[in-house]
Image (cartoon, rainbow, N blue to C red; front, side, top):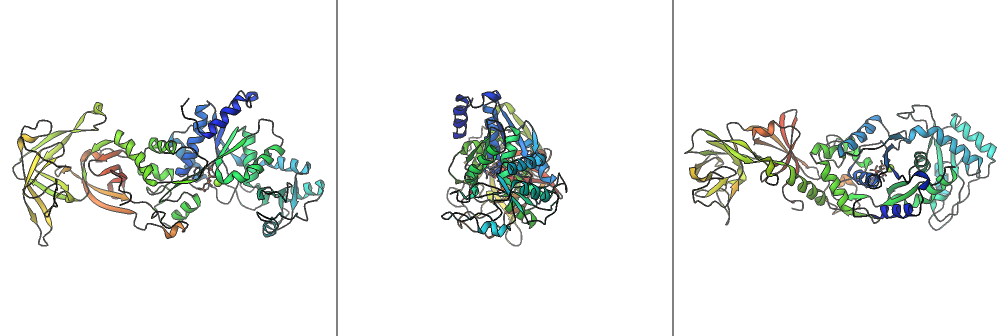
Length: 545
Ligand code: ATP
Ligand code: MG
C-alpha cells in the first residue's frame, strides 16, 4: 500500500472497517465512465489516476464504461480513441462496458418506478418544465400530469417507446418533491423522446434515458462500489441515491464521491470546446501536438509516466483550483532530463570553418550523464560545422562566453576553437565564421591549458541532415481575461516552423524523445516534407517570458 491516503481512500478504509462490503468479499469496484463524444484530455487522466489508483490500492477492479446514452454526439471513432488513450497510459481495465447495453434493463426499471408510483409521464414541454421548476428560493409547482394513474402512466410510457408521440411531446419524470430545496429533486426527467440513430443501437430506440437516471443505474448494474466523479455532480448526489434506492438493487449500493476537476491555465479542458477547435480548423486535428488531449500529448512526445506523475503530484482535493501549465511542463522536463538521450541539432544554422583542420574523425558523445550505464556513442567531426547563429556575436555584451572574434569557445564533446574572423554577404550578414582549433584541447584529453568559459553545440556539415523543426506555444493566452470565451483568448501564432541541421543519428531514430543539447526536448518524426524535430518542452521554464 502506498503511504499517502487521499480523502477517497479514507472513506473506503472506514467502510471496509465497518464491514460494508463483506457480502462482496470486500471487493472494491470503480469505473472510468467517459462519454464517447470526443477525445480524452489531461483532466480525464486525473480521473483515471484516481479510479485506477483505487483499483491498485485495494486489489479491486476498474471498468472502462462508455457512458453512451446520448445518441446525437457519440461515435465509434471516439470509442476507439478512448481505448487507445488508456492503452497508451497503461491503464488496464478489467472490463469494457457500454451503458447502451443496459437500455433494456433501464427500461424495465423505469416501468418498475411507474408501478411503484415513483414515476409519471408528463406532457409539459421542456420550456414549461423549466418554468415550473422554481428557483433556489422558491419551490416549483406540480405538473398537472403528476397524478395520473399507474395504468395510464404505464400505457403512455409504452406508447412513448412504441413511437406514438413526437420528439419532446412527453417525458417520464421521477415523482419526488417539487418543493425540495435541491432543484435536482424536483421531479427530474428520467426519459425523453428523441428520434436519433445511436452508433450502437441504431434506430431500435426512440426514447433515451437521461444522464441522472442512466448513470446510477449503470453503476448499480455493474456492482460499482464507488462512483467517483467531479464536483459539479455534488448537487446531483441526492438524486443519484434516490435512483439506486428506488430501482431495486441489492445492498451495498454504489456510493457517489466527488473530487475537484483538474483545470489548467493556458488551455481548454472541455471536449465541447476542443471539438470546436478541430471543427473550425484552428488545430490540425484532435491529436495536434498543441492539444491538451491525450492523443495530442502522445503525438507531442510527452511520456505517459510524466503525465501520471503530474496527476499524482497535484493530488486529489475537494476544492476547485487552477493548476499552472508550467507545472505540467516541469514534470515532463524532469522525466525527460533523467531519461532522454542527448543529441545535437542546430535550429538556425551558421557555417563554421576550422581553417587548420583537415580530414574527419569520430568523437565520443555521452548519451545521458544521469545514465552512465548507457555510455557514449560516436559523433563525426570535420572541417566544416554548423553552429547556432545566436552563438556568434559581432557585438558581444560583457560576459559573453560564446563565440566572438578573438575569443575561444569549446565545441561540445570536441575541441576548443578560436575565432579568427568571419565572412559576410553584400548585405553585411554573417555567412561564415572562421576559426582555428587547438589540437591538444580534445574533450576528455585536454592538455592545452587553454580555458574556454563557454560550451556550444554544433553539427558536422558533411553528414548533417536537413530537418524541419516545429516549436509550439500554448493554445490560449493566459487567463489574464478570466471568463472570456476561449476563442477570444486564442493564441493565433502557436506553431513555429524552422529549417535546421541535425546529427544523422536523430534521423535514424523515429518517434523517440531527445534532449537537444542547450535547446530543448524534441521528438523525432516525419511529415510530408520528411524528417522533423517536434518540440516536446523547452529546456528551461521560459513560460512567463
Ligand atoms: P468535458 O466537460 O470535457 O466534456 P466530461 O465530464 O463531460 O468532460 P466525461 O466523458 O463525462 O467528460 O468524463 C469522464 C470522467 O472524467 C468523468 O468521471 C468526469 O468527471 C471525469 N473528468 C472530466 N473532466 C475532468 C477534469 N477536468 N478533471 C478531472 N476529471 C475529469
Ligand atoms: Mg460528462
